Length: 293
Image (cartoon, rainbow, N blue to C red):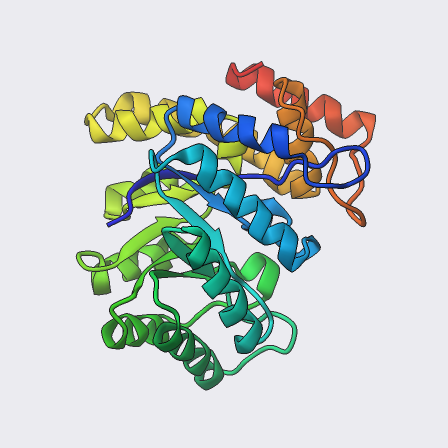
């Protein structure tokens, strides 16, 4: 079962918006060195909707090469049709992804029946582990709990979920229904510690790009039973998360914050724009207050 803190890492670009391969390789070692438990490539923070099929494969290939099996690599395989999801998923598994993170089709909004058919078909036809990606912030869809429970019951390779709803009631219900047999990863930083207390197994959080050492330290404190320290770290992480993830364009802010910490990840791909001076000032102040700058 997957556990711990996973970083949904950014895709670094050079000045011409090409994937910056040397920086991507450096990032892998940076995150592992900070104590994180795994990497998620081609998630929302990896700007997957802006990458070509070939670029997606290249990103995961590079990450796998640099990880050298030290930690799990989960690869995002969210596409708008079942057919294209299968094509991408098979290719990513062939490269060596340890599991696939698959969100629902998000353009034509599927019914509950269509969602179930989509994931069932993927599970039947993909020879690899699948995690459901519930991210209503971007898709406008909350994958129904009944469908998740049924999918996990009927398909042994649907092993877990990244739930980015930020809804502790929903996460609690997931734990109650299936926590002992199904990996539950909270997808928002403000519920990291609370979700672990209730029984979730880990997190996949954007803020781990910016403050990986704080996220890793929080998980260690929780595992060691140091709840006072865990509470203090959660509050620090919340401060960074409120500014970097919630207040501004998430991708632009994360990359700006990483740049302030000396990570040359470049700018987001257009149409996302770099942030203005006031926003950059807010981010710098939050990083200083949290003690990571």
